[in-house]
Image 1 (cartoon, rainbow, N blue to C red):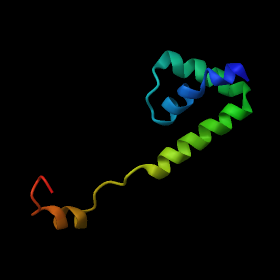
Image 2: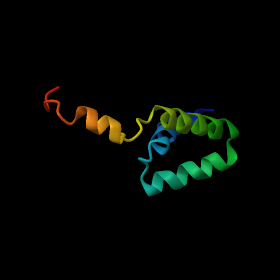
Image 3: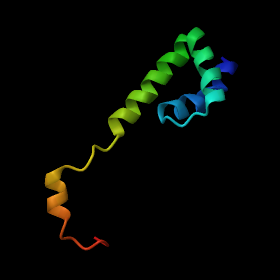
Length: 71
């Protein structure tokens, strides 16, 4: 389990698409053999997916077009 702790930050960075290639390769190797970390990685990715703000719609752009920039 200690080895898994070494990958906690990498799992979060992977979910945010912020891993460098070397760390990504190390993490993917670990995930291939660790079901617990795979589950954590899936949960982190899903949480960030759900928290992502959707693109601004045309209606929102029209509604806010005349607002002052500091609003």
